[in-house]
Length: 96
Ligand SMILES: [Zn+2]
Image 1 (cartoon, helix red, strand yellow):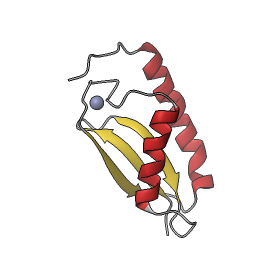
Image 2: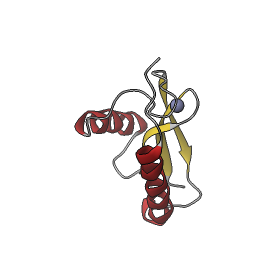
Image 3: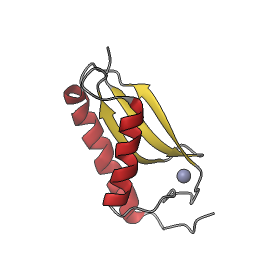
Image 4: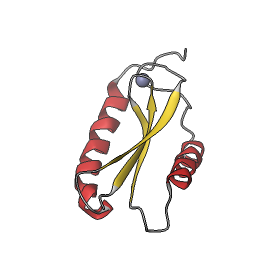
């Protein structure tokens, strides 16, 4: 069974937060979505998209092309580093 990625996306599919997880490891989709909501509050992030300003957000879960979170981590960490650079240099929109 592949590892899964749950993303919290805006209507333009920009990802606000994401978590990789494995079914059968004590996780279920609703709990992962709840974890992302808690993480948003913990990190004091705004509940809207920092790229396009959309406040219409939804969760989407899809399989990763690997079987474990450990196998996915190098690619996910590279993606995270890219997103942090984008966040640093992209102008902040107003919410809509
Ligand atoms: Zn967006």
